[in-house]
Amino acid sequence: MRRKPKSFHNCASAPAVWQALRAWYGSALGRKLLEVERLYLARVLPNLFGYHLLQVGRAVGDNLFADSKIRHCTVMNLVAAEPPRAPSESEIYGSPAALPIAADSLDLLLLPHILEFAEDPHQVLREADRTLVPEGHVVLLGFNPWSSWMLWRLALSWRRRVPWCGHFLSSTRLRDWLALLGFEVVHADYYFYRPPLHYEGLMGRLRLLESLGQRFWPPFGGGYLLVARKKVATLTPIKPRWRPRRRLVAPGLVEPYQGRQRRAASRRSRA
Image (cartoon, rainbow, N blue to C red):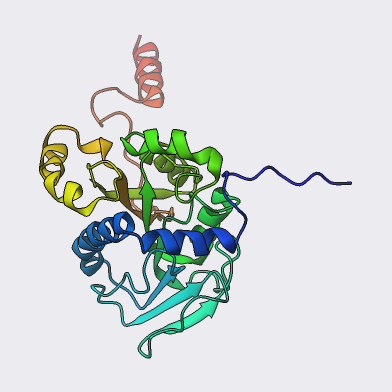
């Protein structure tokens, strides 16, 4: 009997984990984080162009691509019980590890906190590589393990509470995975330097930490945003050289052997 592979994270299996993540984003802390993430997405999405955009899941937000200039935007639901779609957007259902999308058809893929809770994050990235067109982009939102949030994760992950039970991936590790697939990270942002507290009044008073964190310790924000471009190696044609080959020795510098031989023969005949 084949052994079932160990889960990448410590959370419940899908679809319960996606429903729990959506509920967490409805909390005071989740709403505050979503507000910041929408702000950073609004800075990068208008600069990414194409024809087709896919957002994987509604657990983080119903529509994270409001600032994108791409017209055809689709949301892929991860659980059947997710809310109905807006009239202006398309909707499909599927798994992050097996996107129901044709190869080389997406210009932009949005993965909001998908890798931390996916059973096989490597397969999710391989699907991104398969479905994106050459020079297409993937935008990833992630929880940063090298931040104050890690203390809460160490304390609460054993309870299998979302999001602390997820496998937080460092941006450095994610860069390595993307590089192996031929992606180039073209943009990175870190955000939310406040501790993950649910008290709105205290969170408001700690807002100063955001500017201090951006200035003095940027890689230690609670979350990060990465934009990676799919690179495609191309062959550079070499033009044939139709010009005649140059002589290795310039004429007149060295006398040909036949000329020297005839000159020596004429001297012997005169003698």
